Length: 260
Length: 104
Image (cartoon, rainbow over all chains, first blue to last red):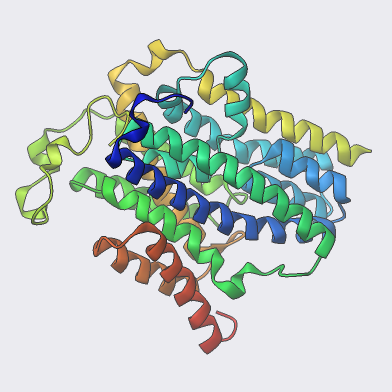
């Protein structure tokens, strides 16, 4: 991030501007959600500083909404905390995926950890190179942190002002972004099978577990599939399923799994 | 006051999970099974996030305007259009459908 030798490399400059533009887009969309979070938190009985403490210190949207939901519904604050922590457990899985890539130590790790969220992870793990992945993580993490907190403050102060991002269709922007990042990884039958199974498991779980937990349960699909013996590449990637012009699926998923 | 305790406990717990993920020993990450799981995790997490954020509100499964937004996004992804075009088309389509079909 500081004095990379290849800053003048035209290819990298192009990649960099693309990554930064993508990150800004996600940060703006998330900032709009921050506005609705601030307004909802106020309606749920929190004051300005309590709401800001959540966005600054908890900084993981699902958990924040989870805590507010329990407290506003009359639940004990500690039950709200338990829900929030359970929802935040998926960030540990993100960190497991990111630690190899970010390779941060000491004080920098303490600061970086706070940025490990859905958006920064999603905008990092879909990248072509480790360098682009790191940039995607930090640009999205810092961008979302800034605009999420700004949005929260605006939401609390403006209360009902723009409290429904649904009118702008922004609630469909995030899944579309995740889909765009998922698509390049869906090479081969195994990837498709695992992805569809995860989506199905998550949806089936939605009515039965607290908000945010279905994604956590879906993660188990990945863990189970990963622990099963790997099948041969031929079984996973029948030639008939390859789309014309695509790379050989055999090199789509590097053995190290660092980036793709 | 108890509300503040809930907030502080929740923040500490969430941060602990974030830090724990980054602090897993590298030797653990070098095991093949762990690498395989780590490679599959983004696929299942992204896929589950797409499904849940498109087809649910809170604890209810719903089919609303977001599904059309996602369908358009799927087409745009298949055509390999730029990321921001994919995202903007999904939001625009969803907003448009909501104008036509109130309550969707």
